Length: 593
Ligand code: ATP
Ligand code: MG
Image: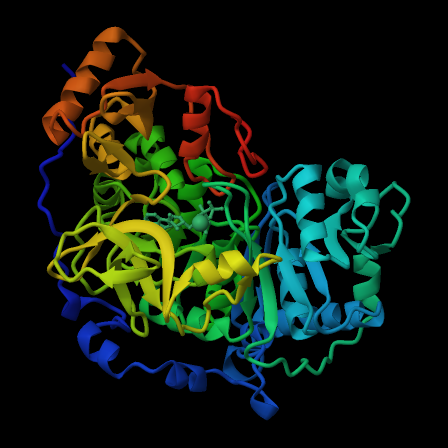
C-alpha cells in the first residue's frame, strides 16, 4: 500500500505576527474591523473634483508624479524571453495616449470596449486608458473561441475591441458580421501583412499620434466601469456590472488581504480575462504603487519557479488549479530554485485543500493563504491573512468592512444561523464598494440574489466558533445522500491526501434508495497507473477518512478533469457526462491538454 501523505498535521498554523516584516497592515484584525469605515478608505485615494472617482486614474496616475514616478509599475515577461519595465510615469503617459486615441475615434463615456489579447503591455495600457476616458471595459479571455466572443460582445453591446491581428483573424473575423454594435477594431502591433479589417485601426500608429496629456473623465463613483463575465462553472456565464468605486475595495483588500507594501514585487497569475486578473492583476497592485509581474506565457512549472526566483517576487497570488499542477510536477522541480524574497502566498478561485496549504509550507517555507470571493463581489471578502493563524482547509475570516453570515432560506426570507459549525449559505451585508450592481440584461436574477440587505452568494459554508469560514460546496453541487448533505470539497480533499491523487472531482449520482450516491473522478500523479487495486485502495482510504456514508461508492479514473479556463473543476460537466445529459454552456471549458 502506498504511503499516505502526512495527513495528520496540526489543525492550525500559528503565526508569530509581531515578528513579521514588513509590519502587517492587518496586525490587529479585531481593532481594525472595529474602526474600519469604507468612507475612510475612500479618502486614502486621490479622488477627483465634484466627488468623482475613476479606477483608471487611481491605478495609472496616483504614483506617476513625484518620488514614485520612476518606480517600475509593470515588469513584463514575454513568451520569447523579452523583459520590459514600464514605470509609473510611463504607464501614465501610455494610458493617456490610449484615452486620447479612443476619444479621437469618437468613443464616449459609457461606451463599451472589449479586450481580447494575450497578456501584452497594450492590454494593460488599454484597460487603464479606457477607464480614464469613462469607457466601460469588458475583458475576454484570449483563449475563447469565436462564438463565446460574439455572444459576450453582443450581450455587452461592444462598440470597440482591442485585439491583435492574429487573434482577430482566428477568432473575430469568422463572427465579425454577427456583432452588430462593433465599430472599431484596434490592433495592437498593427495589422501585419493582412489588410485592416472593417473598422480596423493600427493601434500603434494611433498611439504615436496621440497626445500624452489627458484630463480623466470625472466619473461618478456609482458609474459603470467594468463588465465581467463569471466563469460559467455552474451554468451559462453571467455578466456582472461593476462601478468605479470598486477601486476603494481593491485598495482596502490590497492592504488587508494581500498586505501590499510599497517595495513589494507582486505577481498575480490570473489572466485579466477573469475578474481576479483585473482586480488584482491590474488595479490593486497599481493603486498601491508596487511592482507587478506580468507573464505572457502559459503555465509551466519551471518557468513559474524561475520567475518567482529571478524577479524576486515577494507576494504571490495564484489559484488552486496552478498549485495542484505544481504539486503534480513534483518537489524536485522546485528544489532547483530559491525563494528567499517570497513572504506571502495567497490563492483564490476554488477551495484549497489542506494538502495544498501544507505543500506551500514544505516547498516555500510559507503556507498558502486561501481567500474567497466571486465575480459578483468584485474583490476579496474572506481571507487568511498574513498575521492571523491559518486553519488549513478554511477560507479564513471576513475582512475589515465585510459582514458575513451563514443563513438558511425559509419562506422567501432567511434565518441567520448563529450556531457554529452549522451549514448554510454564505451571505454578505450589501454595501461594500466593489459589489456588483447588476447582471447584464437580467434584473430579475440580480434581485433574487438579495434578501433585505443581505446578498446571498450561492455558496454553502460553515463558520466555526473562532469565526473561520469553511467552504462546503456550491449550492448546486452539494450532494444529498441518505439524509446527509455532503460537500464535494470534503470528499475531494480526503482523496487528495492519497499520494497517487493529483486531482479529484466529486458528484452526486441519482439513486432510487439513497437519493444520491457519491461518485468521484480522480486523475493520478505521474508514476501511478490506473488499476483495480488502486481503485480499491482509494475507496478504502476515503472510507477510513470520511466514514461510509460520506465516502464515494464509486471511483473512476480520468486523465484530466474538465475545467473552466480560469481553472475550476466543472462538476456539472462530470455529472452531465456521467448521466448522459446535455452538457449545457461549455464556452468557458478549457480544451483538454
Ligand atoms: P458561474 O457563476 O458562472 O457558475 P463561478 O461561480 O465559478 O462561475 P467566479 O465568480 O469566477 O465564477 O467564481 C466564484 C466562485 O468560485 C465562488 O462563488 C465559489 O464557489 C468559488 N470560489 C472562489 N474562491 C473560493 C475559495 N477560496 N474556496 C472555495 N470556493 C471558492
Ligand atoms: Mg458564480
